[in-house]
Length: 521
Image 1 (cartoon, rainbow, N blue to C red):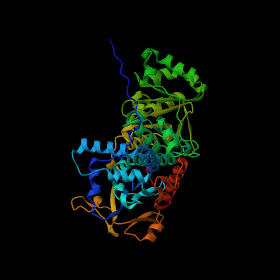
Image 2 (tube, rainbow, N blue to C red):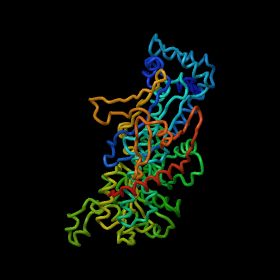
Image 3 (cartoon, helix red, strand yellow):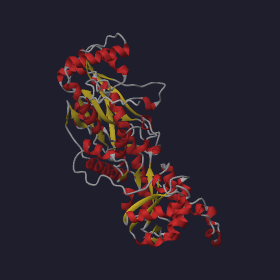
Image 4 (cartoon, one colour):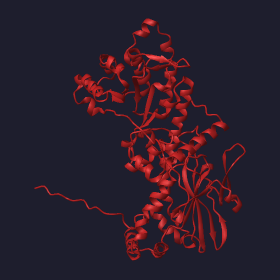
């Protein structure tokens, strides 16, 4: 006899937000000097190990953190009965630490206050901040809760390092693709869709997929990570215009259900079902080059007669070789016309094979563009280096960069850590017995990257328009700082729509180009 078990559906625990921290932080409140009433912390990207040539990082993710954690996650805590909250907290700590002196009076006091007494200042999201510059600060606004800024550090770090890192990587793809579009005469509008987010299935969670794709969409319009729509609507509301798009597409279950002998029939059904518009078909279920050289030619008239584009998606092998061909460079140049014509499909690559069958036009810069009825997307194991090599080979063979779209997956957007940008939160200032105290970490064993800022912080623009940081500043410097209050004492002081974040990034890129023209590619 089979028994059924009904899962228990529960709402968030009243202390869930209170426990969203590193366990060791529970003891810190009692370890600060007596008389401590204020603590100031900052978030800084200290290095760029992932993209050594990139000197800036995209500011992104704070508004989502402020809404989801500082506001929504703490609501059950403040709504619950204070005795229940303190009892649950004490039981959690007893089971975790054993007998201890942490107590719950501070929890009761926070509950009685009714809000998180914190002030969050930040650069506008979408800003391109130089590595080494603090992009946000957090401090308490009520003397009794000096322990809160560093207490929420763990949740802050866990929430924003990933979307901001992805946004920074996506911008590198955008820079690369724009540079090659300019060089090879591609239609600039095609770059919006030239990098497509395929990373959702390899993300750590649905939530991380949503936040990551939002970072990707600051630079592009293509994604298959649909949870990002709710993420953007909830955390960056407003008149956001065209947020993202995709096209009908197949997967291997569709392409292989009839077996290898049924591939032609499957392609016919694709064309029957989608007589117009863009449709993408994964084509390596059995023999990619057989599809390109036998199946597609059999459908040539139908493909060329469509009002739309059939996009071929290879999905295995070396992306560079598959797209552009195994024979390349001097070896290819030295071949006679006869030997060049006799090359195998693998030696030619998908772009050239589609060109042979469906033809091309030549753009104003003299580069070949595939007939508009066919296209190529490759979405397996794409990296910045592979993308660059694909564009280099296409250009060398006389093709515009717009002939290929690249699917960017979890290898690029999830195979990351907080250390890729050296992202860290550090305390730099305190008030003890009414006396300001500048705090600085400067380990002799850590190198220059481990040295933190010191004191209160202000950001300003230098003569070139670049953001620079000054430590140990005066109140007047802080008042004029680019770091402005975003969230304070339970409420937003400033909200950005997603469209505004995108516009801020566009403006920041234009300002960067004016200072030092970007020359990727």
